[in-house]
Length: 331
Ligand SMILES: O=C(O)CCC(=O)C(=O)O
Ligand SMILES: [Fe+2]
Image (cartoon, rainbow, N blue to C red):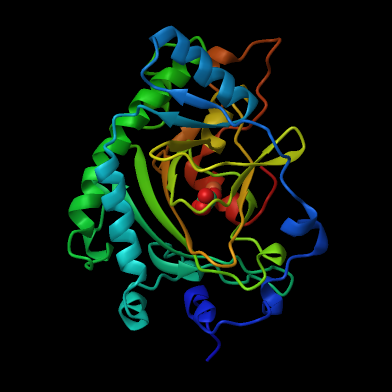
């Protein structure tokens, strides 16, 4: 049987990358190097409120991406999150396969590897685990990893912190648009806002300069909150260049996603990003996608629209947005 898990393939210690992973020349990291010396915004949440509103609005408008520090999440909790994720991927292969997902049948939850959709499409060098974390009424805890046994407790604790930071960021982003602080949160469904966990695991890759971990994309979410392990790899697109995001211990990486770009009528940018892989080291990242429920109707906020500022995006349900993006329609 052809291997479908990247982790299993990586264990074979291949000298050469199999062809389905070799990117066309114009996509390869060796031909699209990141620009050196460009500092990514780093914002401390402990600053005075008015400074914070300004810095977050600037970073969200100019980059669609920033790092936050002093977010109040304990380093121990982040370490535990990383340990339980790593422990899951260290389980024997058959134990992980019990959780296998099936995206072709609309079942994204569980353990997966992106499969080719057609002959042209290249495969990403990544395995992942994906599951919903909030709201509790929609979460199916049965599909969360049962091993390690502390996975659930640690992840629920992390979810609480993600909700807290999400609410704070949505308030700051609302104020940065000159709006009441609750506007973005309520437009995204208030207590129905969904948090999804995606643990990315990028095994060592024999020829990392020819491959991509995750290909260039913007997130469909409203925002994405991510912690990586210490292995560099994330790059963000800024002023027609890739910029490498350096590791900063205990920082939280914030991506503005498509839904905030739409709600803000383009004032905030959904950041294009990609991830590279490493020859010797395993890279991991924990991405939390913050998204509206599928039935939420998302469009440019009416208070931001006038004769001088016509809507730049159409209004549609999040379900329709997802459907179109997965099927690569124009938006
Ligand atoms: O691993 C990373 O740093 C980025 C992953 C990512 O962009 C995603 O899962 O959407
Ligand atoms: Fe992403």
